[in-house]
Amino acid sequence: MPRLRLRQAAALAFAVAFAWHAQAATVTIVVQNVRSDRGHVLVAICSRADFLHPHCGWKGNAPSHMGETIVVVRGVPPGLYAAQAFQDANDNGRLDRNLLGLPEEGMGFSNDARMYFGPPRFEAASFTVPPQGVTIRFRLKYY
Image 1 (cartoon, rainbow, N blue to C red):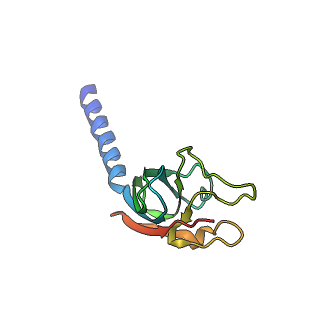
Image 2 (image 1 turned 90 degrees about the horizontal axis):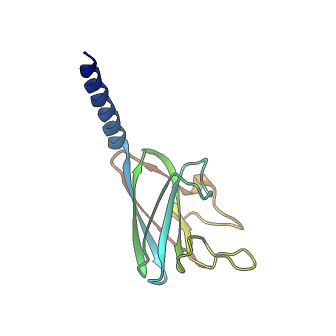
Image 3 (image 1 turned 30 degrees about the vertical axis):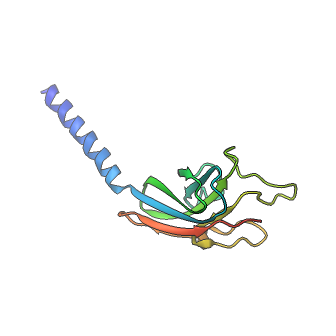
């Protein structure tokens, strides 16, 4: 009898893991206005609570391609999110800023949310990730 319970527990664990994975979606981000082939384009998909913080739940990157770079982020649960991206031209893993605090590398937000003397609000950059996944597009801006 214990062997049967072990099999049932294993089957249940597999079913739960498969159901979770089936609920996770793929977000394809087409980052436009990339100015060079140097470095990588880094993208973070963020919940409202994590927006504008370095610890967003889902991240992806791809080698920079002048004009347009496509970054694919897998495993995003359906819901409401905002995306933030930048071209890490020198591959140091961070957005470089000048003495005034302005970005030295291209950066942007989903929906092409505008920055007025600071970053956009979550509502301006938010988009919905449905169970089947989604493709979004936005442009990098250079200052």
